[in-house]
Length: 453
Image (cartoon, rainbow, N blue to C red):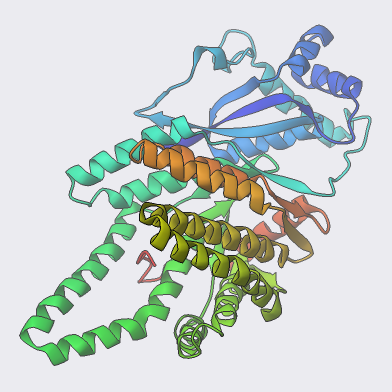
């Protein structure tokens, strides 16, 4: 299996608050190179400073370079059987530590360490904290296509067993290409635990089906038992995915209880059904509230300040478009039946895009952690265009466009999301790490498996 390694890349951008001349002098001093060479580095649109590092080491180097004023990105690369595949054009211009001459990058790190002790070699301009920090997504459809195709073929060949490994590979790709302040997310789950959860669920349904034929009453009892267990299965799956997601070596967490989950996923959906959908917005609101308020980054929990009325207004906004769509569907069915399917499909895609954009924006704009807020600004017109073109291209290519469709949707959502820091973000991360260390290693739950719900 492939492991994620990282290149440290400079893309021609300097940190806010730094003057180009000062940055050039900083890296001249740090790398022990001429000003001409430093100018060449700053002029590059893409320049690999260091290759093939684990995330912890890559992040340490990135922090050093940020102090000099360079905007640094950590780009994931796949390493298989100890061999890193990379294009010839991506070969770093700086020498590696194994060369005869001393590595320029190693010299930079050494120089900064000395300067920090002597309080020298500081950047001339103080770094200004940005008002908003954008999330980035660096994935591409062609890259994901290769992963997607291999996942499908191996899942078919192994009769679905490989699907657990396929999920891990897919999540590692999307997590690794999602970044903020140069740091990428990580997905750390083991495929064996995902496979275990799927086998348990599949085994239950197989047993329930067989028992229903032999003893119908027992089959009904098992069905009711499964429904009652749904809130527990959901909390276990959410906890599993959170524990196996991390940023800057700090894992996320989820601590929802069965009682809260039962209200969100059983009681209120049942009330919505009995009220013919009138209470559906409230049921949806309670589910979002349950997910956010029970989630955390390390030991720090997220906050959620959306109200039921916010979700009610969103779903009321669908009322008129849906009524018009239903009339168009009915008219097309009687006037020109072949048009019926197209109108129904267009209505479905509009509802999907509308709910995705409106509820997505509300979810993030209402979420925060400590004093740090999230902001999302997706536009319905733009996302609807992506949904329509993705659907059309996927249909015309018999499904082969799916990887590009997935990447296009993800890229739009991620790049319309920002973090509005309410203070020193680096200090918050450092404090989170201290809290994690104080608590100690996280205990492994005996049911630490993914049920896929």
